[in-house]
Image (cartoon, rainbow over all chains, first blue to last red):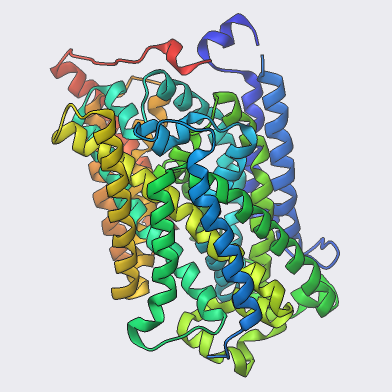
Length: 67
Length: 513
C-alpha cells in the first residue's frame, strides 16, 4: 500500500469486488439448465462456483492490501 | 403425528446437556469482569480470527435459515437460491466497511451501532432511531429461531395438546436464558463451535447420502417440475423474476450486517484484521447454505410430502417440515438425533446473540441516554442482563400465543426497516458529509414508505413497482433505501445552510489500525 492509499483507506484492488456483484446480479446469464455438470443444472453449479471464486477474490484483496 | 423417536430424542438431549454445561462454563473463558458491559455484551472484544469465524457463522446462518431456505426451495423452487448470490455479496461489504467500524468502536468504547452514530453525528435522536430500528427488527428474528426449534421437536414425535405441546420449547428457552444471563456473549461463542461442527457434519452427510440413494444429481433434478427448476423468463415490459431475484439478493446483502446481532459479532473480534480475514473465510458457510438449499429439492425428489408418516408434520408445520421429514426418511435414528440437535442448537446461538445485541442497544442508547445518564459499570451490565431476559421471554410469549405467520411478516418487515440505517451506519464509517437531521428524515421516509409497500403488496417483501409502463417488481428494502439516500443527500445542504454546528467526536485516524 502506498502512502496515499494509507491515508484515504482506498485501494485499487477493491475494484476486484465489482466482479462478484456483476456475476451475481446479471441473472439472465445464468438462468439456464445447460451446460449441466454431473446432473446439476448450470443455474445451480454456476452460483455455487462463484461462492468459491468470490472467497478467492476476497483473499487476493486481503493479501494485496495487507500492509 | 409419528411415534416418539427415542433414539433420536436421547442423542438430542445428550447434546443439549453438553452445550448447557458449555454455556455456563463459558463465563470463565478468557475471564473478564462481567460487571462491565463490553465484557458481558462483547466478550471483552477478545475473539481471534477462528472464534470470530464460528461466532459470526453461528450468528448469521441460523436455524431458521436452515429450515426456511430449503422450505422455500421445496415450495417455490429456484427463487430460494437467491440466498447464494446474497451471501456472495455480503463479504465484500463486510471487508470494506466493518473493519473501520471495529476500529472506531474500540477507540471510543462503542458497544452498538447507535453508540457510533451518536458519537459520529452528535445527534441523540438519530441514535435513538437507529437503536429502536435495531431492537424492533431483532425481536421477530428471535421468535423465528424458536420456530426452527419447534419443528425439530415436533419431528422427534413430541406433541401435546394446546400449550402442553410447548413445554419442551419452554425448557430449551429457560436454559438459553440462564446461560446468557450468566456468561454473556462468551456462551454463544463457545456453543457456536459445537453447533457449526454438527451443522457441517449434517450438511455433508445429506448431500452425499441422498444423491447416492436416489441415483445421482441427474435423477434428482429430473424429478423437479420445470416451473421450479429455473426462474420464469420475464415478459417484454417487466424485469419479472430476474429483477425480484437480483433485488432480493442485493437488498438482503446490504441489510445483513446492519442487524444488531451481526454488529455484535463483528465488534467482539479482537482486531480489525480478524474481521477482514473472516470476510475471506466466512464463504465456507455460504457454500453450505447453497448445499442446504438443494436439500429442498432432495425433499421433492424423495417425495416425502406424500408419505403417510409425515402427513401430520406437514399439516402442522407446512413446508418447514420438508427438511426434518427428509432427515427422518434418509438417516438412521441416531443420526437424526445429531442432525436435529444441530438445528436446535443452531436456534439457541443466534437467539442468544440477538437478545444480547438488543439488550446492549436498550441499555446504552435508550436507558443511559434518556433515563439514567450516569450509571455505574455494574448497573449498566446488570440492566443489560435483565433486558436480555425480558427480550427472550417476550419472543417466547410471541411464539406461544400469536400465530406463527405474524412473526414471519414482522421478520420480513424487519429487513425493510433495518436497511434504513445504512446511510448513517455504513456510509457514516466513510464520511461525515451527511447532515444528521437529513439522515433522520431519510430514515423516517424509508421506514414509512417501506411499511406501506409491504402492506400494499399484500404483506410481501416484493413490491410490483411500475415506472413509465415498465414493471420493476423487486425487494422494497432496496427501493426504499435508495429513496432514503436521495432524501438525505438533497436535504443535507439545506440543513447545513440553516445551521453551521457540526459535531463529530471521531477523527479520521480512529478508523484505521
